[in-house]
Picture 1: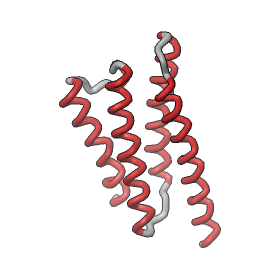
Picture 2: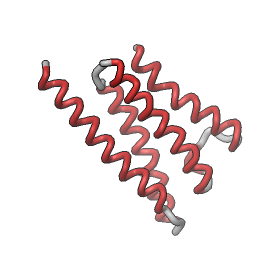
Picture 3: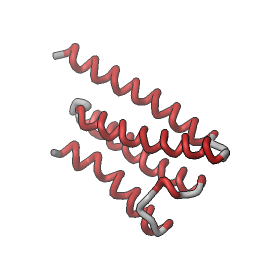
Picture 4: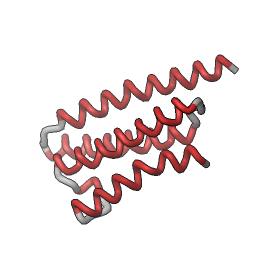
Length: 117
């Protein structure tokens, strides 16, 4: 329960920013720079919460991977939408590549935690 609360904080903060700055709850309809700000707030906050949980000594739970998959799917949907509309997608593609690298890092941490048990 504690991990779920810690992982929900970045979602709440990014949704508050979304409503306060863009007056919407749908991040898919945002234009490029606004979506990138929202997505960076979400991604950096989420990974910050993962590293906080990890530094406390807790294990990375499956719930963390569900959140990670949801964030990745949001970025992928926006990437596909940008490609279909012919918009530049370079920054989003770089963020998604970095997100994949960090996801593989987290999976290796989880594998190492299972080996230690």
